[in-house]
Image (tube, rainbow, N blue to C red; front, top):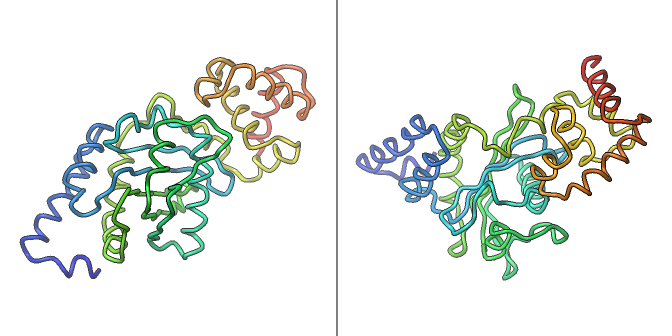
Length: 265
């Protein structure tokens, strides 16, 4: 890569020392210190969002790494941010899976307007450029997207080359970190497209499929509401529609039918 070839012997030694720190990452605090510390000299950014899941179905989760006040994973609004991440993923794939640098106007990176705001959404509206790259996981059957944002100084060709080189180390570091309490593998419970299609053929929306998975994991309506950052009343309404579409009368029957579809796939 041109990026590595441009480094002197001393700079190359320093670079390898920095990326080697990825092997020592074990917590979100470690990730923060590394990406907001030494890694800034190679990939300077104000915000980095790491997203993973099935982007075709819209079932993705994300981590946020930033030194900006209040811009944290646990307080971000998933409903507001997911459409932005899905759009960035489409642009990245349309480019052939190569690092993508982009610049926007004064409105910054807009999130889903109908969803409640949060510190991350407010901060993204102040960002003016982004650098996007990802990794397609053929074995795990889901993809990862990494988007770095800056409020000033656009990303250029050198940063794109840098991103291509350092991304495997960033990806490895985050895979060594335990999920946060509000994150689970539940959005990936339906690993088979066939089971997902069977549910959608019954008329279930993406949100209803997501809620049904939480129900199957034993979560109550209030718990699901807190996890998805929606009201208990909204969850209850979704459940009523799920019952009707699945032609069942209660949670136990809905879960039973769901597990039958999963087990028979």
